[in-house]
Length: 183
Image (cartoon, rainbow, N blue to C red; front, side, top):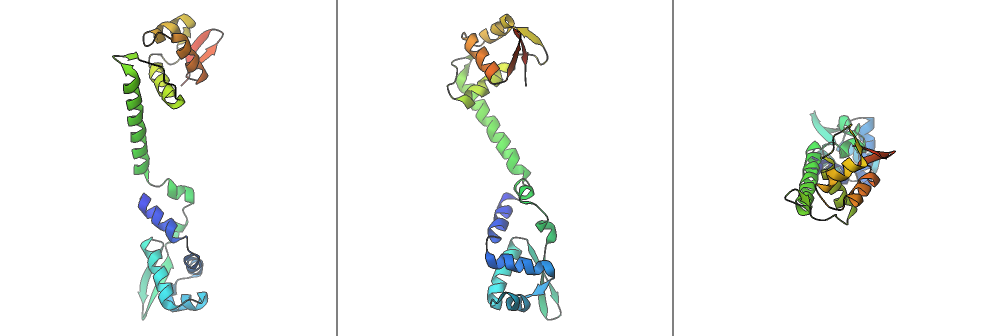
């Protein structure tokens, strides 16, 4: 289901009469007049609500002799709300792409010719910058404080502050004066 279909379904179910129709159709498929009688609604009102439920994909109809019989698409009802919300993977891909563009924008703003121009004040931006600096470190390798300072100094003169931020953000782990990348 697309995000628009999920929204349509949730909006559709936000009506007391439609919920009552769904409850009755859970028991068995029915025609408009029987639903109207059970719910004490007029047949045109029931037809209106059934049309909304059909548009949302929750109800289907079939012709049996002189009547149109309505039944539930039970497979759609078996989805939990969490499953419905996470169903549209294209939306997740778009979100990941947006986050990557934002990250690239921040890196471009704070780095010039491979050097860090300033340390961001905002925590989120600073974390992005620190993660970019972490690319200079090898995973699993143990560094001395001097080695960490030299690596950071290639990007910015205030290596002490940056090292402190990298440790406090959990990017570098410090243990008895030795540092390891912790990603």
